[in-house]
Length: 263
Image (cartoon, rainbow, N blue to C red):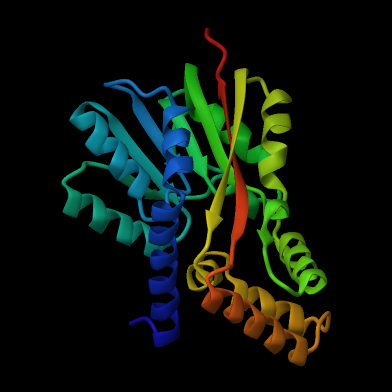
C-alpha cells in the first residue's frame, strides 16, 4: 500500500499534466499537426504521461489508428490506462525507457514525444531510438520547452533572473527546446522543420503551480544563493502583483519534425 507522501506526489503529478494540457493547448495542437496524421497510421507517444494526447488523437481519427504509449513512471501508466478506458479509446500502454523503447525496429508510422527531452542527459541517443522504431517514410516529432526562455514580470528583477537561471541550470537539459533543430539536422532525418510558440500565464497561482515556483525558490534558498528573507519578500511581491492583476509570465516551446529516409 503506497504511503501518503507517495500518493500525494502521484496526485500532484497527474494534476500538473492535466493543467499543462489545458494551458498549452495551441502548442499541443501544432505538435499534433506536425505529425501529418492520416487514418490507419500507427502512432507512438514516448513519455506519454497520463495519455491525454493519445486519447485526443484517438477521438480525432477514430479506431483506424493504432495508438501506443510508453511511460517511465508506473503510476502514470496506470492513470493513462484508466483515462483511455473511460474515454473509450483503445491505446496500448507500456512501462519503458525512452533510451530503450520496448518496440521492434521500423514498426511505427509516427513517433513523438512532448516535454521529455528536458529531462534527458543524452537527447541524441533518445532521438536515435525514436528513429529506430519509425518506419522509412515515417515522421518523428519532438516538442519541448526551453527553461532559458522563462520570463516573469516581477518587481525584484535581479533576484527573479537569479532564480530562473538557477532552475534552468538544474535541469538535465534545461535549454533543450532551442537545441532541437540542431539535433534533428545532425541526425539522418530529412525534411526537418521547426516551430516556436510562447505561452503566457497571467494567473500567479497557476504560474506557481505550472512552473514549480515554490519548489524552485526553496532550492535556490537551500543552496544559499538567496536569503530566506529575500525568498519571503520575493513571494510577497509576486502576490502583490497578482492582487493588482498585473502579473505576467511566459515560456517558449519548440516543435521540430523530421522524416525518416524512405527505403
